[in-house]
Image (tube, rainbow, N blue to C red; front, side):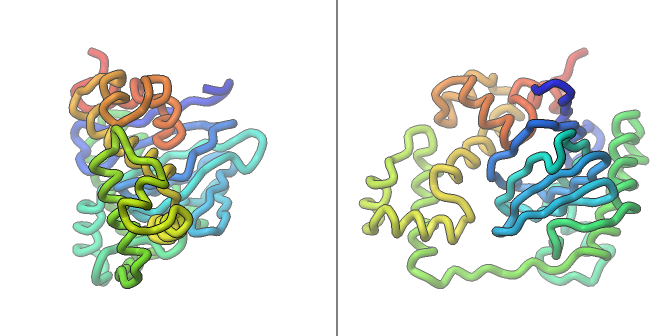
Length: 277
């Protein structure tokens, strides 16, 4: 990492349904990527800039980035000194459970705005982290649920249902299925388009419109998602790299770090039951 940078991405063994990231980044640049979970990032120092939905957003101290699952976004420093933040990644099932119990949101809950100024909620996020780090599982779980309920009440809404109507969207979904099936040895764009009976540029446009990323970027993101599952199951980083289609472990390391925020080895060591001692 760059001088002055540090990051810990981890799970508390008695705090199910959420990952945690505590990090300081200076020159870090996150590639466009998605998360299966929600992202609740509370900025403590500096400024983070991220792109989502074609718009650029800036969050500073007391601000939060609130990103819904499967939403493409980036991330980088907005000031020379970078930024420090505490991040919660609650799973959709946990957020849905809290929404059903504490809100009147009907449908899939989500956040209406990608960036908000809410210093009280940002402090709550930090308190979740401190309680987890101190081994206070009951306090951390209570604070986590209180934080999510507050954010949904203040900044939440039902996510729109996306209906696939166009032929281009259906073609993009068929392309996605092929890429998932052949992740370790995917076809070229030209071959993929030919298999689907369309042209390369038409496929590029359709895929970008449907998934917010071109096929090659989406594939890298999908490989990292699958790599996380393999690492969680105990597969070594070297074996994981081959299994998901990266040329070698350094290739995995580079892309994994640009999406998750830490290298795969550091990620795996912090999973429950895999840490030192």
